[in-house]
Amino acid sequence: MFAAGCHLSAAKGYAAMGREALKLGADTFQFFTRNPRGGRAKAVDEEDAAKLRDIMAENGFPVILAHAPYTMNLCSAKEDIRTFGRGMMEEDLQRMELFSGSMYNFHPGSHTGQGTEKGIEEIAEALNQVMNDDMTVTVLLETMAGKGSEIGGNFGELAEIRSRAVHREKLGVCLDTCHVHDAGYDIVHDLDGVLTEFDRIIGLEHLKAVHINDSKNPAGSHKDRHEKLGEGTIGTEALRRIVTHPVLRDLPFFLETPNDSEGYAREIATIRQWRGK
Image (cartoon, rainbow, N blue to C red; front, side):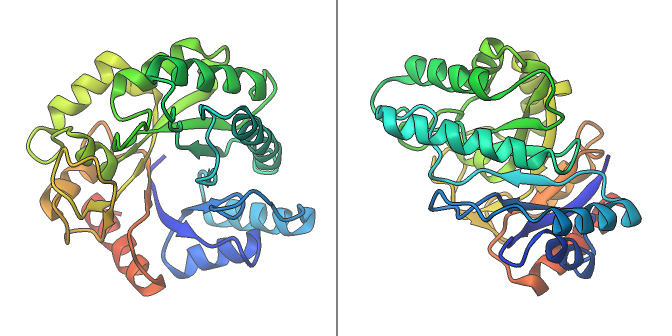
């Protein structure tokens, strides 16, 4: 299911994102379901969604990826924030059923002083409330850099969330290259070792997508600041190995680099060149 795309603005609607993706040479894209710093979502336009479905079918888009807003924290120490987050996720998952078989990515959250174990418990509980047997959307836990009280900075925490999820068959992982690098996983010098560890702890069959980003900071910095491909501390050769690695090469790749449209078009072309298509 190899595909290459980037993060696009949803401001002009679904079909506009599909058309923009095609202009950039992409056959997938990621977008925020709502304002990333807020909670409101636009009303669903069924006709607009149908137009995007047509674009995807006509141009061979295998999947699209929705990204939850940054304000969603399923393991906050404040109950009202947790409740707010569950409501957003539930609504988002219902909306994404407009695109059967799509994916929905979210940052696991920050426990804000409660402790990792309590945070994991609350994330799993929230997932068990909003996921169901009939959903076609695959929910993705994102690998994180491990800054502050952030959960998901190591593979074990993501595995523990999955183990407590009732619908774990619909719960995968999105590997963010900047985040795992900043978390201390040596994807520059020992990619095979990192993937072996991922397989042992989580299982590579649960890895469903890659956020392909360079990093502004050194490995293990726990900073989470993305950089353009080849301009950061991960570097071109390491990123090329990731895109072409036998375990990863057939996954969808999503850019979240600090770029404009022209920059994204160049990077999508670069990924395709590395991948050979």
